[in-house]
Length: 417
Image (cartoon, rainbow, N blue to C red; front, side, top):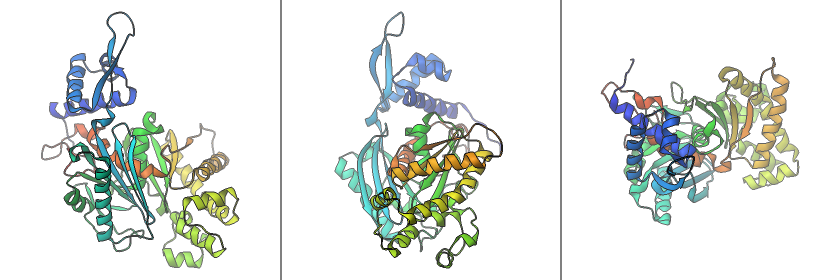
């Protein structure tokens, strides 16, 4: 179906464009907003008045930029909106409460010993979100939503909304668990579900070095390997909502041990970056390794098992990254997630050299960059998700669905503002 738009949705789009311009370029005058957006001065004035009434922006100091009276500068109000991010994996739960400027106001981290069953996981997620609210003292009405992330793949319903987990091997026993429905009922807040890697890419786009990069790929390291794609400024989910699943790329079985093939069944790239697998190898050799701090120490000591784990994985990741470079032609590829900073730096340096040797033709190399959120990349991205979906500009805002309503992005909660 080809969908048009009308004045109602054009107004919603302009609202988001003005807010995004202030967020990215503020402090900024109304005249400069009009110049950058090519909207009329009256339209900008009306929208900024609405944003002021909502508390999302405020008027800062006056700035003299030429003849005439100094212009009032507009800037984002960090206290205008808050959101929560809950990053769940087999080995941890990281929860963040962030303000509209992306500043972390409160953080909770809990180590986990293996994947939780759905009922216990839902209880932990709900209790942790409530703890964030209680310990910050913020009223619930100031919270724009809760972003929840787990490793993919995710199950997308026919209407394009992600409400279930499609039984990933990372979480045995999970199958079509209505995560959004359960948590919205418990928390009485809009809930948005996303895979961790795409969430990290969204966080990089809104608050990190990706703010001024329209198209980039994000390689995400956690207990395994994932990826997220920002294409022309918007997250790209793919047909089933699982674009970027690097970890499921084919891997020749001869690369793996017999034990690997027993544990993981089908060979795939993510096995080579599986952190519990690395821990088992290290402990079998007499090394204690149960945390990121342990891995960093072993890396500084040039532990041969850790270096072999890295090099084997990177040898097979490099051709995939090269394929991403040639097929998508992104401006940059970010690397982030739950690996120590020295290891992440090493990965980028190693891949930079390897890709230079693999390229068939001379072309400007894609920039390989570190993610800016460190080990909290997914949690920050998930906290960004409610604000991003409800306030960021995108062509989907202009489109009408068959029933005349503007569609939310595929990950959106039905309870969004």
